[in-house]
Image 1 (tube, rainbow, N blue to C red):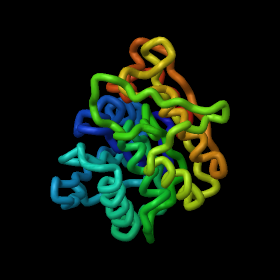
Image 2: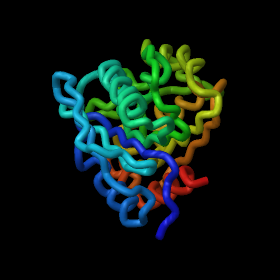
Image 3: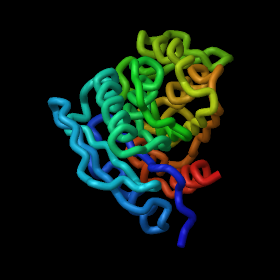
Image 4: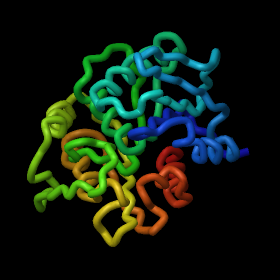
Length: 244
């Protein structure tokens, strides 16, 4: 029997993602008994939230699926607030961990920094995968990767309104939150094919005054944006982070 997680683990997919986005990772987690069961929560295009379960266990794997995964970070953040509130009020979940990919990582950070909330579970640990924190349009597919320029201190030279809000609202984060920023490098040090390394690394400045931050750049041709959550190295890094 594998070592189990102590809190429910919530998965948030990226732009245009869905059921299959974290299928492989959840399968591996269940196979090794890190999580006990898979829970699906869906959000309809009109924002109707449905919990497809009657039971959430101490170490459930909870997959949030947006039926329209192309809506804004702000809208997703508002829906996530409702989901997390229900986790605590209805299901009695006091603490959770999170794994979020791409735009989903920006959405959860927007919730924690800029959405007024009450009765949310405490987030103990949070994993960000290939997240475009400094991009003008997080997650949207384009032919070119946004080239984000950082200062020597890791601060974006040009900051979007959303990025400034994330930085300003970082004071609302728990001081003891642990954040692990995993970044893909599949094309010679510039990006994972969709998100620039510099845009992902700009999270460090946002969290400079709060919590515990660490990052890992995965240098591999297989560390592409769409495959980060299926990469074996990434999987091992996440498990090590969550269990220690």
